[in-house]
Image (cartoon, rainbow, N blue to C red):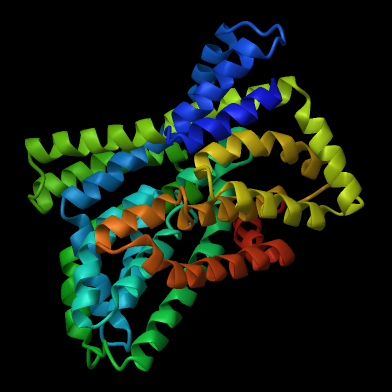
Length: 429
């Protein structure tokens, strides 16, 4: 069955079939033709049980809250506030793009949503001030890659749902790597602007910052409510997402007065579309992962990892990271996790590996796939936003990938880099 599943998946993807239907089709063909004696209804049960999780309910709520930010004028005001803080710096407009993506990520948890929402606003300003299209597009995509790392990231929610690891601990661990990526990207913007003698806004004006803060106070309170609510233990991530949705509606309707019935309907449609894409892909992946389990591939793969690494947990983590980087070029992060995690998580856990550290490393590796062709979602959404060709973006996109890889190395070789904050607030695991 496993051979049939893998060949079918590759054939369907080469034919241009969307990855969700490729995974489903490969799973059904494997059961139908594999002769393993599995009943066909197991595919249906696996598909349904794959998304039957309270933890995963957080995803649609954060998708809705992100859409509300965009349609309700909250995103626009956050960008204005970031602009007042950073636009006076050399490279300030690019820095604003990165900062706004980080704030937006603290609400939506989705990199592609950040590209569409923040990129569509900041891209024209960056190009107008002198940034080239290829740099603008790569920077938007690279900045959006912080969204799944800075809580509440959808990918981290899925990791916790699959492994049973504390979501709060995962979220707290994501802050340092997420901010590290953001700061490095800001430094790149500064030196790019300095080299090309562009984007120097002038002097810092505290009065403008205070005025912008007053305009966007209610918008900034939204990510603050989510972050404090989850990290202080007042609510679960799912409950925090629901609170954010209600809060965003109140602010958009009564404070900023930019939400009406038509926009609210559009918000729900956009959120339903995004949620459907993510969860259907996740469910289809669990069907494929079930075949791996039945065929006993996990034991074979674990044995191979132990032999190659001589039982060294760090080497195994690096091998898994490299494997995820390769298949991440062809599969979305939410499809990679259900297939790969059940194969390696028990092994690393038995070796005493810090699972929060591994979770962040694994999550970062899956996100890098979003920056690479042929499937990279951040890459292709960015191409649409900045209206340029994929090949033109590749050189600068490689720089964004190197930045992410540097942070992956820091997470892998310096455990305290990502675990110090959850250990400080929640105590050691």
